[in-house]
Image 1: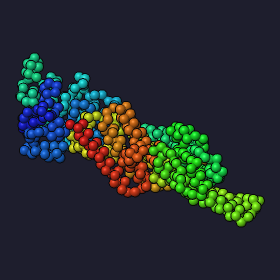
Image 2 (image 1 turned 90 degrees about the vertical axis):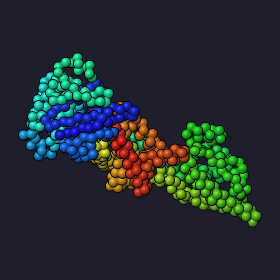
Image 3 (image 1 turned 30 degrees about the horizontal axis):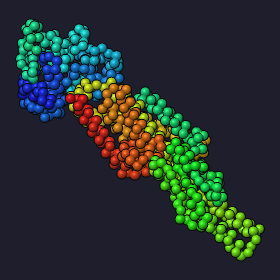
Image 4 (image 1 turned 120 degrees about the vertical axis):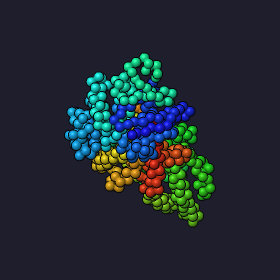
Length: 221
Length: 387
């Protein structure tokens, strides 16, 4: 169980997060909704360890993940909204930054990289593969070490329907194997995938049950 | 890597062409190290005229000094301001009279621009030595001989051959002077010989420019990449250090290959110019490493901080040119006013030059401090990008 409690963050006098609190159970997908600039990416970057919070607690089974960077890096994977891959290298070389030769061969044969279908474009330079392939490759890199929680910042932004379908299939598969995800999103399809949704507004996180009423959702953002 | 190496070769070719142009040009061979000295005033005096002619034509200093006679001090001053002469000496009638009166109490007046002060001091000492020790003594000797022979009742036919003989002894003494040759070595920065000076200054300038060749290292990288890598446990410090080491390694490989190639070809060129290459390539290859470490960290900081390829090139190039100029890469630093010389010495380019010229290890400490500062600042910038 991941526990997020009282996370606060300010930039100067502007308080972006005001005591954000929620829990994530194994196998859950949590959706964070909110308008642009509401602090969704800031929340995910704090959970990923990219910046420290001004206050609050983030733990797994009672173990502090903010103070314990090693444990956090092992348990938490982060997939940024933009493509973080090195374009000049091919898919294999990007993976080799994280996987040893043996680990890579094993994962490609019968592991997460096989599930993501990365072996199809392994030797193609990243600059020449599609957006969906890049996202799958990024997830493949992020999944090194078998993290339990995946943080995804607008995972299907700017992807076409086919690519989105591929990514959603992987989400389902990851969840079915006990994986936990927190995604920040603007996409209704992703909202429908989530077990729980929250709306982040004015720095405060509130639970939201999406029932298909788009107008109501827009009114709450 | 192949692209980086090709770019490095192109830069080396440009700097090499510049070096070839300097070392192989007719004007350089004729004018290298030459000090153009204006002489104004009473050059009608026979003895002084002869001394000047000896300096100009017979003495070893003819390789170093061009004597440019001026009738009028105004013309000499204009020539000095226009850079046609390095300095000029005003030989007043009082000075000639004092010589003829066998006294040595009137000084030569010497005029130079402030940038020429280093060389001027040496020249003043040299000329003062000539005037005091050779001209005055020789004139004294000649006049004394003439007076004594006249007093002893010798006829003019007997006096003149004796005077001529003593004059020839004086001429011989002037011809035998080799002291001025030393001046040529002192004329360049940090006591370097001409090939050493150009090897070091152009070599360091090449190392600076070569940091552009690996600029592809810094292109196409995104904030998302840094964030992603950081989320995998590799923070700003580790990212900067690992990238810097890779960047340094690429620069080092390119620099060593190119220096070896340029050295081999320069040796052939120098044979044609008549200059000897007293540069030890093995030592040079090792000695450039601290300079390369420094320049790589400087470039790394600039490219980490500045956004956009064109901005990177422009800002870094302008900075490199300015720093190289002030630190005496294109002209010996003694050409600059004192304040600029001091600034040039403490700049990274100046510290690297002084290290290469003197190989004093305290400069390595200063360079290490610069490297630390540049990398520390790069880490701060990267931290901001990750946030």
